[in-house]
Amino acid sequence: MSATWHSRRPEFERRLQAAQIAGVVAMQQVVVNAVKRALRGGYTTGDFVTGLSLNSVSRDTPREVNGEIVGRVGTPLAYNAYWELGHYNVFTRRYERVEKWRPAMEESRDAARAAFVRAARRAFAASAPSEAAD
Amino acid sequence: MTSATVTATRDILNAVVQGVVPRTYWIKPPDSVEPPWALLRWLPLESSGAEHGEREEGDLEILLYARAPRHLDDLDTLTEGLRQAFLQWRHRDGAGGLLFSKRQSWADLPPFSEPADRELVGVRGIVRVVLWPRYLTSVLTP
Image (cartoon, rainbow over all chains, first blue to last red):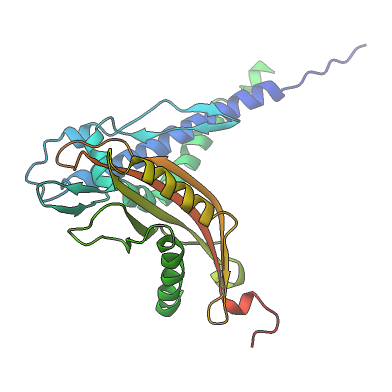
């Protein structure tokens, strides 16, 4: 008679990381939507909104950094940065700053956390090994 | 924080930055301001929830602007001056509570193009500041 023991820890860790990645993707999507909603009116009057600013809001693929799953939401458009961070405008001859990104990210924080929990739980449950496999 | 505390805190932080950059403003500078100048703003304050949320901390944003290429060396000097000013900084007086800095980070702003003034270069600093009301800093406070 013999008994064997094997650890399921590596499998558990893989499932946990996959669940975290699914959660971060869900969070990113909530933030992307919130920022796009905020950018709908443009930075000033909305007269010059072309859709480029909205369509450029994107997320990257989450990855592990120092043991944490990190996902980013951003835009390649430089002019978003100088409206968000503020700039001295040569046409209006004054300092201009209109923030859309940071308030949208702060307002969507709770919704993003809830989305993380939902998506991570679902992904973790879905990756559970079936009883037959035992 | 009460509005009086907010004003007092602003005055204290303003004095620290003004010691390095004389032209320092909150939120928005005057329209025709001559560089170099600094702009201060609180990013939202957070409470740990302890002591009924009275212990707060938040990020103080410092934007520092200068005109290139004339003031590039000045910008480095001013940035270093501000970094030193907030290094292990603490303020305590009879009227207010205790304020002290924790971590800080500084980064150059990317070069901007039109409609932004292309000669204006900037540095953005974030200083974590902790605010404790006076009655939570001394057992002798009535």
